[in-house]
Image (cartoon, rainbow, N blue to C red; front, side, top):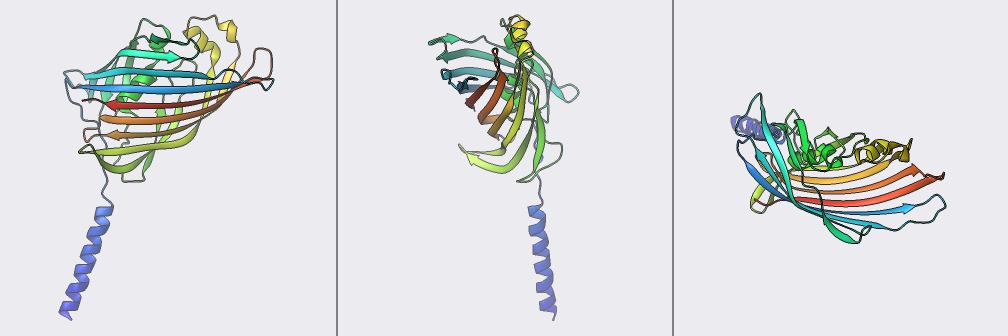
Length: 277
């Protein structure tokens, strides 16, 4: 009887251990390391086509963008935040619209970063006026898909992040991010975050035109609306730094044409951000 009871107690104990292991949660955090420098390579391809109000199709547009990014942290942590700077270099853009290759304006972006990957006090410096509004690009480079949740997570847990859009006049989007667990790659262990959903898009073209230096009345009362399907996967090292980010965006948009009717715009974009050190 004693042996039988001991066996039962042992089984219950082991079952409890299995349950406890299954309930372990990972607290995702960005370790704030002073004077840390990380380099990334960005490659982005965008294909866009148009359907005009009369049913005819416009010429397909292909844009390729590539460049380097360096993220550097400051030397002091204050109030749970550390200064962070992102500098771009070697930015190149090719487009079928111009049939030529040219350089894109380099950006120098500053902000404050906390342990959950949230950014604040963002300032974008550039010789290009429209580029100064690209604070969303800053966030995507520094924290990938989005900030980390407040509580610990286990595989399958999800949370919502706000993704600021790059262009003036575009509304921010809400994106659900899911923790997929850990993955071993290139001899390292990474946290895997994933997003896969449709999000609504809306943009005021008059505001975008003004930001680009064009007269607002050229696009007066023209609203761009539609949806974008976002598929994104980010790998983060155990210090919470982005190791790689792969994103595919498929947009289906419409805007009132200048002569009446609607212009439909379809766009496919793939982007990869890869750490180089």
